[in-house]
Length: 440
Image (cartoon, rainbow, N blue to C red):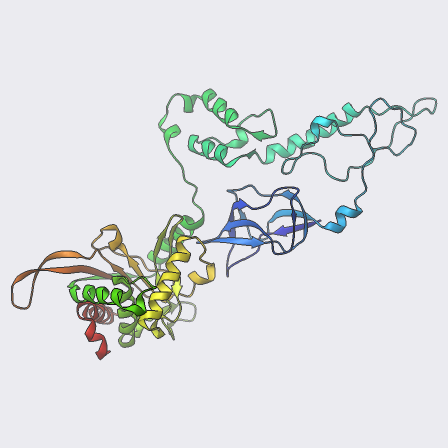
C-alpha cells in the first residue's frame, strides 16, 4: 500500500487546499490519472497519481488545507490485491473446530466510508477453550462491539459531511465536530437540529448571522504579499491625467487590421507596449531590491505582470520577455494569459519572476488609485477608466476627448522621484500620441 503525499508543485509552496477529489474509494487508477484538484497560492493544479492500483482511502476532506508532505490518499497496488488472503466466513451459531478462526463482521457494518469500517486484512483471533478442553463458540456480536469503539474514536477526529452540508454549517457558524450524528456522516438534518438547539443561533444573535470566510488560497497569499510589500518597500505614487484620443484611434485601426483579426485589441495592449518602450529610458523601474546582498538588481528583460480579476480572486501572471515582442505577439500573449487566468489554470511558475505590473482598474469605472507593489518589483502602473470628457485643446477650445488617469507606484529605495516621473511622463507621451514611440 502506498501513501501519496502532497507535493510541492511550485517553488516555495508550503501548503495547499484540497478543492475536489476526482476519484472515490474503490476506484482503479493508472499512473498519471488525475486524482485531485488542489489550490495553491494563486492557482488550481491537477495532481496526477504516481501509483497504479485501487483507491484504499482518501485521507483529507475537500476544503481542508494541509502542509506539503502530508499524506492525502492511500492506494493499494494490483499485486497487493491479488496477494491479500480472503477472510473465511463463519456462521455465528457454528461451533469452532480450529484454534485459528476469524470472526465474521455483521452485515450491517460492511459499508465503508472514508477512514471507517473494517480493513481488508483483519487480525486473527484464537478461540477460547472450555474447562474440559472443548472449544467455545465464537460470539460475533461481542467481537463487533469490541471493535466498534475504534471506529467511533476515528469519527471524533474528523467529521464527514457532503460539501453542501459543510457550507450550511459554515454559514451558521457551526463546528461540524460538535454536531451529534447517528451515522458516520453528518447530514443536513443533523446540522439543522443542532442549530435549533443552540441558544445563540436560535435567538438571532448578531454572531449567528455573520458570515465568515476562511482566509486561505488566493486571499491568504494576496494578504500576506500586500502586507509584506506595504511595510517593506517605501511606496511613492504619482498621477497624470491625459488625452488618449489618438490611442483610441489606433485601437480602432488595429481592430480592422486583418493581422489582428484573431486577437483581442484593447487600450491595455497599447499601455503594455508603452511601458516596455519607456523601460528602455528608465531601466530602474525594471529592477528589484536585494536586501540580503544590499544590491539593486536590474533585470535583463521585462516580465510584465498583468493583474487579472478572476472568480477565485486577483492573480498576476507574467508575460515573460514582453519587451522583445511585437505588438501582435504581445496581443496573443495577452489573450492566452487572461484566458488561462480566468479558467483558474495559471501555474505557480507563471506568477513568479515578474519585474513590473499593470493593473487595469478602469474596467470597474474607477478613475485612479494607489496600487501596492508586488513583492520584489520596483513599479506598478494603474490604468483608470477611459471616457469622454471636456478637454481644452491646443487652440484653447473645449472639445470632447478620450481621457484617462495613470497612477504609478514605485519603490523609493530603488527609484528616485526624477526617474519615476520621467518614466510616467514617457508612458503618457506615447499614449497621447503613439507616433512618439518611433523616437524611443
